[in-house]
Image (cartoon, rainbow, N blue to C red):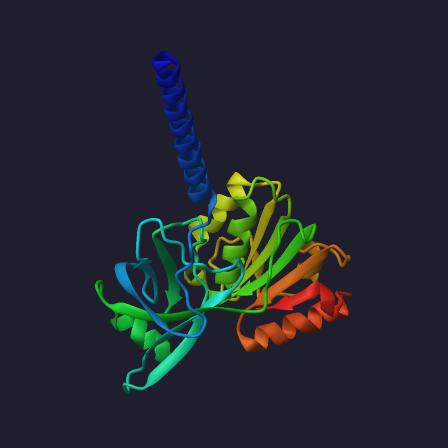
Length: 279
């Protein structure tokens, strides 16, 4: 009897250990499978510390901000933006939207590539920022919603700093091996030096030649230049963007006069309102 009792006790202990092990394993897998919780608040500004500031040109810099933990995600849906709050040269509050160049897969921090204009009110705030300072951020903001495969191809027309939402969407598409969407980008600037993220864009074009094409347009090109010259024309759109179809969409983001001109071009070329989106 004592032998049977001991055997039953050992069996009960073994079952209990097995149950605990299975439960622990399930909990581990659940935690691993969960997406990191986003750090943004759509209603209230939150503070993020500047940990790196790198000057890319005389008026462009990359700002890297730390998130609460090394495994934190910003929590920004693809193609959406954040509102940044600062002070202008007169000390007055200013709020302006910006699109990070990082994705939620970039854990622990987020980055902004900022072009700082001489008279820009928020430009002044970023120009004065030093490592260790904090930036007030609220979000996410924006009407754009993206699901992998929602279109066969994107046409993109960007001007100046309007490249940032295009860059973010393109990165998300190309880095997802299950997403076969093709991207055709026309990127316009005044001079060669004004081109933002050129190294990263060229790298994506090289690494994904069948999925990403880019065509640069300059108003004042250098002597040796094989891209477009002047303003983005209807002919450039016809050549470098997918033709009008129910399964394509053309995104545009740039200065207001450019956006207005591109909308007119697209209308004339037969792109319906449903085929167009302006950031």
